[in-house]
Image 1: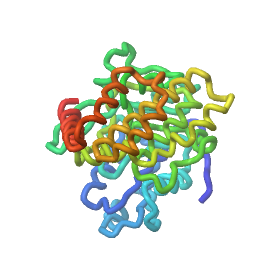
Image 2: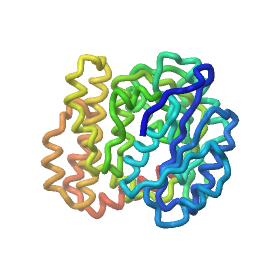
Image 3: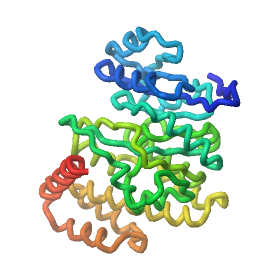
Length: 328
């Protein structure tokens, strides 16, 4: 599979990648949300990661020459996205999960950001969360409401992440091919946090153009266990930090922000371990934290939680997760 550039330099063209595994029940909505875009400069690549249902037949029965269907053996979502990147014909690459969907002006908004912020290589729009009861609640707009501009360029996206929380989702991100050529692809074998690893690497090297406009919807199918599992999964990005810190090409302010985010991430892992009853392992990790980079309130609460029964901690975390997605 070769990597090709745009054939028409006068028009911004997008390659949209949908990884799919046993997605027969919901992928149609995702596909038609792409085909119905107000901006028509795109190709759609559906990478079937070894589905055992009717996903392939459904996609192949949609008659639209903008769609490329590719089937591979089951290797996980990271490899499926990487396959899509390698198949992509155009320089601007977007992703959409098979159970999510875009608003009709998603690519139009990306095009606007690309034309306005020429020095950037990453572009983000706002996203909403579709809850299990069918309600769609805005996420990015609420987090970024204190920022006056509707769109802006951010040199250190880590600061936005630190101040406003998780303001992005893979469905709302567009990257120039240069990002992957320079930094590599999604880490194979990682099923939780694989996109965090990719985007945090990119944040270290690239400025980001951000629009507060909501143009994508993430469908949340469950609460609690899945979100917590991400905390103590093998988050490969932490292992990459030393090489990024040692790279003179990364500005110092981004290095400092990155180190703080890493400690916060580790602290979250400690809390999840405590809730699962792994207090000995959690305490070993807690002792290695650089508390100078952590808010005092957060690490003090974590320290006290070692004295609280794990079952109570687990119930509190579950209640927090459910309340968060019900009210945010």
